[in-house]
Amino acid sequence: MDLNLDAPHSMGTTIIGVTYNGGVVLGADSRTSTGMYVANRASDKITQLTDNVYVCRSGSAADSQVVSDYVRYFLHQHTIQHGQPATVKVSANLIRMLAYNNKNMLQTGLIVGGWDKYEGGKIYGIPLGGTVVEQPFAIGGSGSSYLYGFFDQAWKDNMTKEEAEQLVVKAVSLAIARDGASGGVVRTVIINSEGVTRNFYPGDKLQLWHEELEPQNSLLDILNAAGPEPMAILQEPEVVYVLLNRVPDHVSAVLSGFHRFRLKGRVYPTILPDGTGKVNGKVLKGITDDELKMLDEFEDVEYDRKTVEVMLTDTSEKLQVETYVWKNKDDPDLYGEWDFEEWRQHDKEDFVTATKKFLENRRLPEAKTRMDTFKTFFKQDLENGKPLDS
Image (cartoon, rainbow, N blue to C red; front, side, top):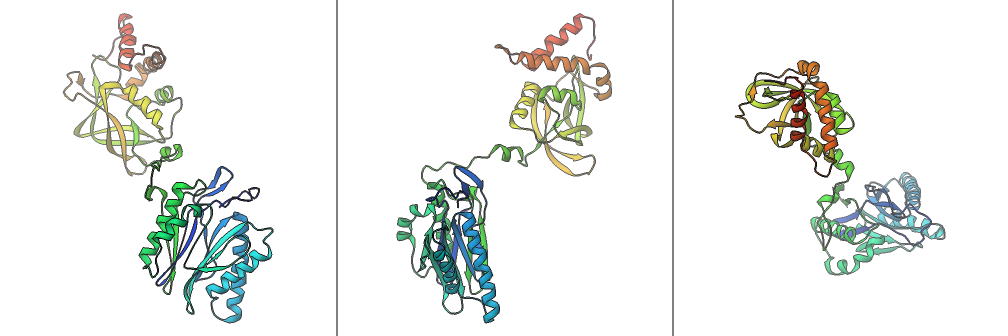
């Protein structure tokens, strides 16, 4: 479906209507484009006209929508006047009349499908110009040019409902694979004597065809993914800002079953599971892949990133997060319990400076690891007479 009325030959979309032994199945993709730009990747191109009649729209979105709105209004008046629902044929002929009388101004091709008690399931194709043709199946839009041979081979009379819907979904997915103006998801509408059923098939669940590429997440999808959030055991925002050049949104949390140890000769702590302890920290939200890579590089080879369950301090909600755990659980340098406020008063300034030095060094041709940078920096402190944890 195209929003660009300046492109007279563009009918970007794929719409399909198929009859089966108890009714009809309508199907469509969901891409609405304006030129080369996808304006809506999840639009609904199958529009209700009455309780038992729907229309698939292609071509200009504005033209197809206004025709559908007019016909829906006329059919409502028809139902009131006659005291019963309009037939599929009446609905199709109303669209044919509007399309033909305005053929010099409208750029839309439509497929009408539905079920009525007089003739059962019916499909009518109404292409550009306002011709109306009853058909056992109809295809339209730019994707249809890839499907005529397929339908000649695959369509058969007296299909079951399941066979008909599978045919429609397969055909739309084939068109999506070949036609740049078709894409998104597949929607179907099944109409029979029992009523109407709508189904939805996400684009990433559709079958892939010859040389078709796997779907790739956009950056927005990655940022909004519901994967585990990193948990900063060190709670100082200034350190996070130095590393990431921002302080992400964060919430306080408690990690149970772990203990935060001091480390001899180092100004930073570590955590290890002990089964009974509790560690306070902050969960950083909305961390990008590049930022996570930076945190991994900063924690270096001394730590492993592990997924753990924490409890949010404010809401008591449990959350899966990722945190950094000391690799060597038998390290002889582990002792005591690390105190954040004490670190803040005595070591924070040097730690921030050493972190900045690490970022400077990693840009050099022979970049130093965080461990090497810290060893060099704090060795100078020792030579200047400033003690470290011992």
